[in-house]
Length: 102
Image (tube, rainbow, N blue to C red):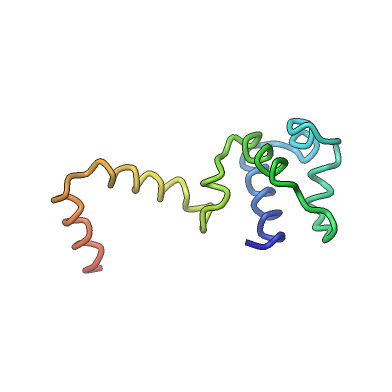
């Protein structure tokens, strides 16, 4: 994942959480322009790992969702995986058969 994708995902999460750039900046203990500066795609400005983790938490999200290959599909995919984990072996085999015969 490159820097542009990280910045894009921060913007998606921030919007989903209903936070302005200023509000998110303040929630993570940075100056009020921190997120705006980051989202401006200034090549010389990158978030630290600790700042990124604070951003994810402040947006009521998880690292798993942020780094998931398709963050738009994460919630549904996770729901399916959770259901599969508790399914019997017979149900798992039936689902595999169904998916393979699409």
